[in-house]
Structures are given as C-alpha cells and as structure tokens.
Image 1: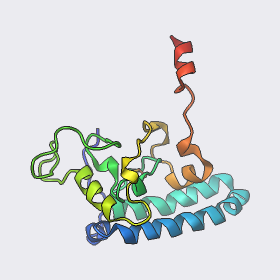
Image 2: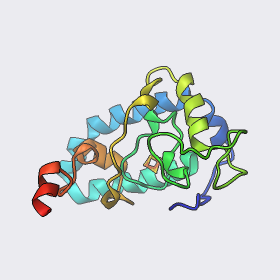
Image 3: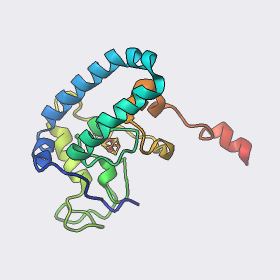
Length: 172
Ligand code: SF4
C-alpha cells in the first residue's frame, strides 16, 4: 500500500492539475512527438531509448503529478490526476470510505484522489468521460519502468503471461 509519499513537488503543480485542459493538450503533443521519434530511437538503441524516456519521464511526472512510476499511465483517463496517489492504489474509482467533505479515509487531511479526478475529468475537452472506462488490473512487473516506452511498445495493454483464464485453469 502506498503511503502517499511526497515526492519533489513543484508548487504550481496543483494549479496546473486544476486546469486539466492544458495538461491534456500537453499530453496529446507529447504522445504525437513520441510516436514520431520512437521507431528512430529504437533503431539507434533499443535499450538506450527506453532509458532515455525513463530519464525524462520520471522527474517530469514526479514534479507534476507525484507520479509513482507504475509503468501503466492512465492519467488522461483520470482527469490528469494520478490514481496511484490513492493510498489504496485504486484505479477504478474511490473506495467506500470517502469522507463527507470529500477527503480520504486513510489520510483525512488529503482530498480523495477520485473526487479530484472526477471534477477534473469533467473539465477536460478531448478525454472527458474516459474516467468511466474500466481499467484492467495493474501489472506490477512494470513498476519503475517508463510508461511512455510501455505505451509505445504496446506492453501496457498486453495481458501478462499467466493471467488468461485458460492459463489459470491449466494451473488448477
Ligand atoms: S505512470 Fe502511473 S504512477 Fe505515474 S502518473 Fe501515470 S498513473 Fe500515476
């Protein structure tokens, strides 16, 4: 369980997160640029390219989103609010313990990540409503890897070995 670690936080990050349209525009540009340069980077150095993305992504997203480097980023589906900041790491909405004032039951002084995400999702232009999508279980083996590289390689949307119904039945 995450203890909601306070990473290097830029004071303006809360203001930015309350303006998710700016962030989703930034996300869209970043994704387009990365998709354009990724094949070239991979050709130059498959290992080095993933390291390079990690080197850029980690500090940028820690400062902006208190990113926990889950490796499967769903920020644009959660109002540009990192769901891994939920102390229970919930990725499909809040638990039943949200306080009457909208704060977290585990950390009472902290607004529930999901109350923030819900409000910010409604403010978005391109991705508004994506918060209703059901997210798959988190693949913990991707922790501390670059979610950008995982997205570009399709690793983040792949079912990990051993997770399919057939494979599970075979083990029984
Ligand atoms: S990569 Fe994971 S931990 Fe980091 S911002 Fe995205 S959802 Fe949050």
